[in-house]
Length: 432
Ligand code: S3P
Image (cartoon, rainbow, N blue to C red; front, side, top):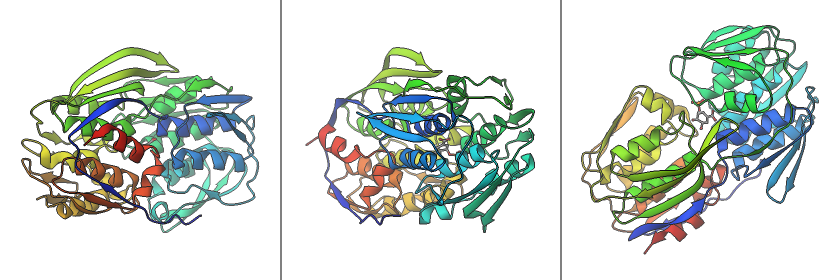
């Protein structure tokens, strides 16, 4: 892995936040398209593919597995291996990307071969047992190092299983579906909390038949994939930072074109509306099962607080850091519960959010599964430690827009994991 030197971005308070943007493609969907295109027959063309480092880790891994990847003026062309992966010559380097490691493990497990996955220091301590269990049940052998990467998948012919997901995780669901797609029999996956359904839509886009009912998803094995031409919708989790910034200024105006609005991802919009964001959705259409539209957002005079708990916490898991970072500016504050998973993301996001809020002068109570952040507070700016976590760097850059002084974001380069355009956009949209 190449060492990236730490960059500090100084974010000054803004007067308002205004502009119109078309965001790069969704990270979650880009991963899935990259992987399925790499396995498919033929050449897929993926327009508006994510510019983030994580989905590019997926593309690099697919190349190592025998796919051909070309960048044709911003459209990614992937020629798949037509169902047979090559034995990689080197370890599969997933960088910072848990999605790559977990979902790709499921995709390679039905192939006879040995696949070793490695990642950066953050990914190397993230739990992999959650995918090992179902994949071993299907017949693969998976070696972990203390429950983490380096991880070696010894793949071979797999048998379908019935699996009840013990945690709400779209990555685990996807690993099981990707393996089930190539196993003998019908794999059934039950999920008690409905997680993002991009894999179901992506599989259908590549010609796979699967069934979805109230309890979960069933997929028949031995199916083949056909290449697609698709445009990846704009990333709603990247938009979250800009929408939260818009919420902070009564006279803000933000227009986001071609934004992904998949209902399994869009709980954030409901929460922001309940907090006072004025929101309009225009030009709604569906492409390859994914809803896309233009979102127009305006702030309002009063920013209300929120209570986030239960299944809502799982649905908002990637957006919780930015909601927490702006919580002190809300009327009644924000309480987050049932979000223990935040502790095992790219960083311990509960501990880092709490520490960084305090660095900006906020009062906050840390809980094992969340935090309580009172509203009506003034933040004075400060020094933020991103912990090399993209969402922490971006969350506190948004909070910095309403602070009384400048904020130095240390490790700001982490934003490039999902949203390399973030700092230039923040400078462009924040009016001073
Ligand atoms: C993702 C699922 C979520 C999310 C991650 C992307 C996906 O992780 O936090 O950023 O693309 O499926 P979990 O599956 O661990 O909940």
